[in-house]
Amino acid sequence: KVKKFVNEVYEITFSGAEAVRRGQKVYYITERCVFRKTAAHDVLELIEIAPGVDLEKDVLGQMEFVPVISQDVKIMDRRFFRDEKMNVDLLGSLTERCTYHDDDHLLFIDLFGVSLQNSEDIDWFSRSLDHILQPITKNKGPVDIIASYDGFDLRSGLEESYANALKDLEQRHYKSVKRYSGSAFRQSLLRKKSSIEPWNANVMFRSFDENSNGVVSPEELLRGVRKSFGLRLKQGELDALCKEEITLRNFSEVITKCLSDFGTK
Image 1 (spheres, rainbow, N blue to C red):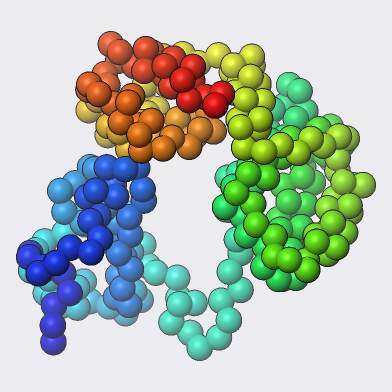
Image 2 (image 1 turned 180 degrees about the vertical axis):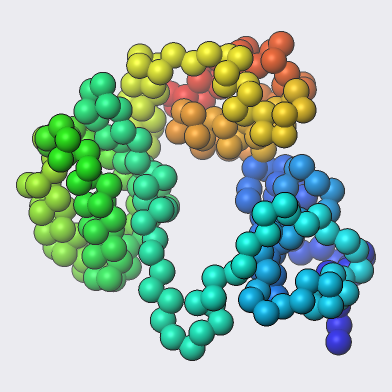
């Protein structure tokens, strides 16, 4: 048998270390286990193992190097190994795109990357959004919606089906709705965050510093800015912000520059 995880290769077609530096999430998924690559370790971290697989014999014994073993190794979803439909629930991916502001009873929806290619996709989208909206409107009534359609894809021929699905949601949950392109949506979101969520540099620095080492790495900054302000920084923008090491001393200055230079473009 040929070992797949080795110390040296003839050619690098994908660099996990470079992807992590750019703020991307990197996973290596095999039929036996799942690894991830992060800035926290120089080697891969094993985070999941297939049911029935012997860690020492079937995984570690087949590698030329020793990975980090997560303290919370999980069993891979058993549905992967069954000869039947998985019935995957994609709700979480839409939930992460929604930001609700209770004070204003206002919901931001960022649809970047959502691609609806058939009627089943539209049904999933409608059910998922309905699931998110139900508890909000049940407690406080119809909600104001601001939606970004930048990067959204709807296959030609599905416009009527999508419009009907939205019409049903609007009648049951919407008080008003505004649909923006990416730049206008970003400005609206930032204005709202600035007005009701003033950021504390010390608190935010600790949330960005995932490794608690006193330094915010480029990938940590990328993820933190996305989570806190809804901004997707491009590589050039990230490089401009990370010309020097980011510590608590200059963190406030970096965030201020980020919002002023790249937050309203």
